Every structure is written in structure tokens, then in C-alpha cells.
Image 1 (cartoon, rainbow, N blue to C red):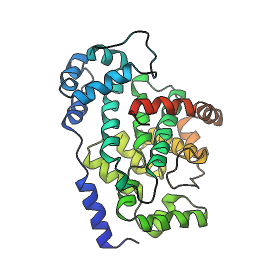
Image 2: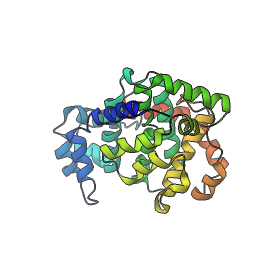
Image 3: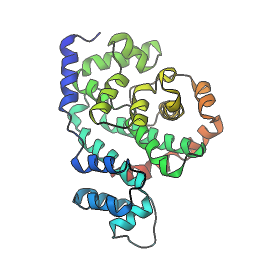
Image 4: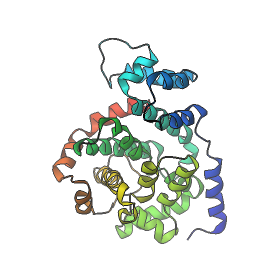
Length: 288
């Protein structure tokens, strides 16, 4: 179990994490209105040269393969969609905020983000297979990207303990979540939820972070969303794409299939297209 001093360090680490930029917070605020339009969103984005550049870089990237270059932010927003732009702003902001190699003392940063990107790609693919509204697909990607964010404070503040946790999971052939609970008394899901509250992430994202290892505790109206993220995490771990410290993920695919209506064929299809989709997602996040 972690001692009180270590818990205080973790809490301080979370509290010291930079808040979301003002531009991103404003975007999240105005996009709560279902009637927000491209001009209104442009009035916020145009005040942030970095985000403006990211939006234009995305619309003109190989991700979309358009024949002509787009130079108008309003047109880019119309073509990308409000939710895509919102989630671009959110995900790139968060990745930039916490991608400090000093925070990755037990887990490798590149392996962690590759796992996270793949989970996002898988989640979005599974959402498509469920017939989810195209306007909501990027939220599945963001949830997959952020599901393990709680590992970063543990990784930063108690790397020696976390190495022991990973060794225990390897020895006992149990999930990293179970090993955390056994040895630390707290899990990356709990800590990730603290971060989600600090950043005021919406219920879908917060629930995916908190409940992707304990579906039975998720609210019924959010359970299908959380189960989709959980499956994306399991498949990514089993395919050994990137590394998040979890070599023995839960074996609850049947429960997830019952909740989501997905099948093994959907998993096979997602795996077949994963590498190309990950490359496109790296463009989305401007990561290499």
C-alpha cells in the first residue's frame, strides 16, 4: 500500500498539472451548445495561432487527402465538423501538457502513447461498427487516447513501486489494474478520474477513464460507451501495440460483446486496419 506521504505527492502532482488552455476551455464551453456554428468557433480559434495552425495542418494533411489546399478556418471547421475540431483541440492540448519525459520513469513514453493512440483508433473503429453518429466518433478516439492518463502521476512520483507492480502482474499473470489494487490500494483509474475532474472533462470521458476496468460500476446510460473503450484497451494490449504495463488484460470480451453488440469479426477487422489508422492518428495529434 502507498503511504500517506506518497499519496500527498501524487495529489500535489495532479494539482500542479497545468490547466487546459483558455482557448480549449472556451471551445469546450461554447460547443456544449448544439447550435454553435463554424463562425462562432472560428472567433475563438482565430485568437490562438498555434491551434489555428493545427486545424489547417489537419485539414490539409494526408489524413483527408483533399485535392486543393484549405486556407480558411471557417471552411476547415465546416469540412471537419465541430466535434472533430473540439476533440483535436482537447487531445493535442492534453498530450502537449503531459508529454514530459520526466513523467515517464517506469513506463516508456513512446510506448505509452503508441498504446494510447491505438486504443483511440480501435475505439473509433468499434464505434463505427456500432453505427454511432459520425459527429460523435472523435469522442471515442479521445476517450481511448486518455483512458490510461492516471498512470502518469504514478509513473512520475513512484516509479520504483510501479516497476514492482508491473513485475507482480507479470509473475501472477494478472492485470495491472488488479496488481495496483493489491500492492498500492489505488489504481490508475482512480487517479485518472481525479485528473478528469480537475480538467472538467465530460461524463463520457470521465467514466471511460474511471470504469474501463470495472464495467459493472458504470452508469447504465454510459456503459456501452465505456465498454467500447474497455474493448479497445484489451485488444490493443493483446496485440502488443505500444506498451502500457499491462501484459495480461481482463478476459471479459463476452460481457463487452453483450453490452455493445460487437463480435469477434469486428475485432479482427479493427486489427487488420490498425497500423494505417495509427499513422493517420499520429498526424491528427502531430506526433511522430
